Length: 408
Ligand code: ADP
Ligand code: ASP
Ligand code: MG
Image 1 (spheres, protein in one colour):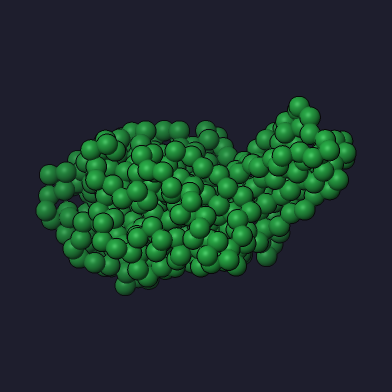
Image 2 (spheres, helix red, strand yellow; image 1 turned 120 degrees about the vertical axis):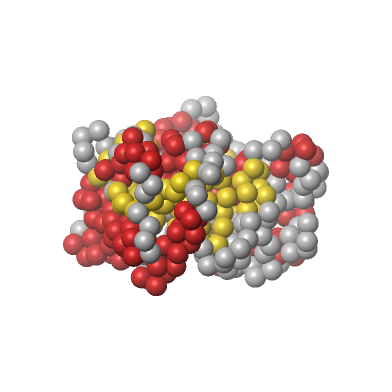
């Protein structure tokens, strides 16, 4: 008998029929004698619907109130799933994040989990109940409802598994595991049986939304056994996120291609090339809590240089505003910027021991006539920024160039 935390995403609970299907699956696990804590997302499309509703009233909704509102999506599904379980003769009880309680900081719409009180869950489990918990939400120290950022139900699942020292955390979704790239973009993408935790962290942070990055960070910090599986298939081992030593695993050099359209690029032209300039530009942006991703400073000519960086698209307009006084102050020539960019990345721990990955990547893009605007590398990834309209082409070409469509 094991303690298992299962998380079902929006598509998996997208209709009452699907919720009944999830209930049948959960009942099956329960019948085998396992203890189950089940985390659910809002029904597919519901969180988006709630956000647009808020925007009809306030263009930039008050974050505290937005959290009160979007948290209702998950409150509906926990109740429906519990009812469906009871209907099947399985004892079940549902809880919101605040009821559990999942304590977070007060950063509305992107709160971090600080602690989880597992007492209530444990006593329900002891009584033989399936415990159903609302994903994506918590409560801060003052009793305000908070949410954990888009895709946050994954993090609720992993955090509960960590708090309860569960034997496994199973993330059920609409694909049967983690693929070499998003199968919606590249139909030839292959499911990986295993992926190292390090690679999963990079894939998630570079845009593979199959797992929210914070859920992967949590799994790493607390050593949670994490598996991604399909909620639509009866059988299947899915993908295991493994902590196995990289050196003992057989590796393809590149494990996957990740991409995102979430960033915007800002270039400051004609910046005086002298010490302290990067700080003068980026300091105020950091003070405003805006994360800067890629940064490139060109080689200077005649004492002037260009300075480019990317920020999340949500922070784009705000960043331009913040930059105005700094650009005047340092007497730069001006700003050019745009949000029609995409970041495409190749990820793999095998890169550590193989040369030539970057050149394969750049050659492939050149052959497709795709211009690279920015490059950044780390030990296990290479990312490029390109024009958004070539993103899918770039992903397909790189997937093929690294033989990811061939069996490993
Ligand atoms: P859920 O609602 O269950 O949380 P998500 O939409 O958040 O589901 O995540 C699943 C989706 O992630 C898939 O439908 C797929 O399109 C996308 N995805 C992106 N990259 C990958 C990848 N490398 N492997 C599998 N799925 C991926
Ligand atoms: N319902 C939330 C969202 O759509 C959380 C989640 O699905 O993980 O982002
Ligand atoms: Mg998700």
